Image 1 (tube, rainbow, N blue to C red):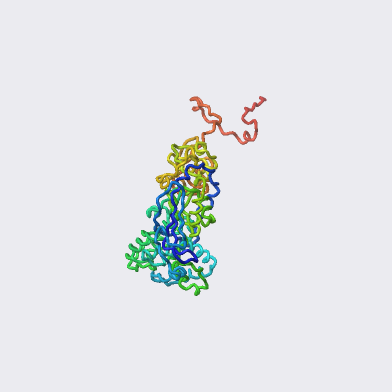
Image 2: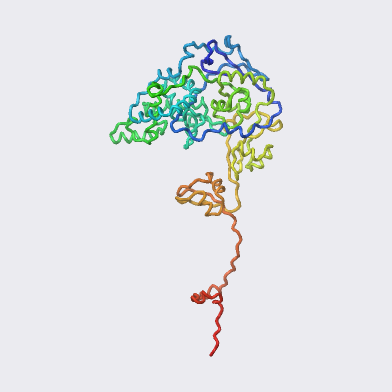
Length: 539
């Protein structure tokens, strides 16, 4: 099913369409194809590091359109786009609203007090000197900004918050920071879990466009309620509420002001609000900085399409007629080459592609998914599992990211080929929501010892000391081969079996009591026969 906020198709005015996707149960009994290539995962992997001057962005869930009851076979209802909607009355959008520039709507909603200092001027100069960078950011933002503005205004929040992803991730939903913050809104794992963003081997909702926007605005609303000031709330979003509270308490103790500009804070947080203010100033008056903003139309870029069966990412991309990069830009939460309907019941697609997806899906013959989930019943080696599920060990390791010399622990969930004999059903909800992969190093021969690292110890230095490989030391301690250890850190090492050398003979009691031999003289040292007694002829 497709659902959306009141939507105006690009360059089209009139009654809105409602597209309904019905059940796909009839596809389950068809023979399974070969799994999609593992290489297809590469484009789904998150980017390594977010740009320094960027901000993450996402979108909140869209209201659902009522759907018809599921049918035994795949079917699609595509109402006449020129007639009234048969699924729901989603209303009409006047021409002047649909064609309105979204930037104008954002400007009208500004409500956070302006910050005016040299740090703001510094960031204005930075962005103004990089028009190409600003252009790339605004192009990425055009996919998500309407949805974010809708959600911000629905909550009655200042529209400046819709610009926050500019400085968090440059509107890159695949952004990943060195602190493991991910997505447009840059949630670290613990904060993401606190705001109900699922993170498992199949999906990471910190990158989900809808879920992460909902969570970010929930968090910002809570912070504003805590501090009663948007500048402090934004500082807490970047630095943590506990850090801001301690900084306020320290200033209060010293009799100093407790506003944002008066607090002592890290350089990154000191520049955080000035960055947002600089972006706000550029959006308000782009011509004053020698910049122009690409117009963004005031209607949704994407619709939600509900899926009721597991489906390969490659097949979904093909049925929608999209480039894979565009599909992943709208569905960046996907970690694997299959979409599990029990965990990801909807995908986002541009308007025309959503209609095409439903039409092509109704006509598709053959299975929808070539991958499924398999739970390890016991601790096993990857080679054993590969034989059991019918795939090569190399492919199993690649698709599940299993490093060398590691065992798969019991209860772990792996992605394996779907086949008619063993894995014909869609993945259950409790697996799709809670799948984890736990690994343990292959126990090598020898004795396990635990040492305390010195301040200069690294994986390489400990490997040299115990005559083992750096790769093994890294695997035993779940670190990279180039890592360094902190002083006092516990390090696990498996020592190799002692090689047999020349056995020492037991020392007898008599030998133990014998006096030590005298040191040889210099002459004796020089002569190879010095240890032999010298016979002297009598005269």
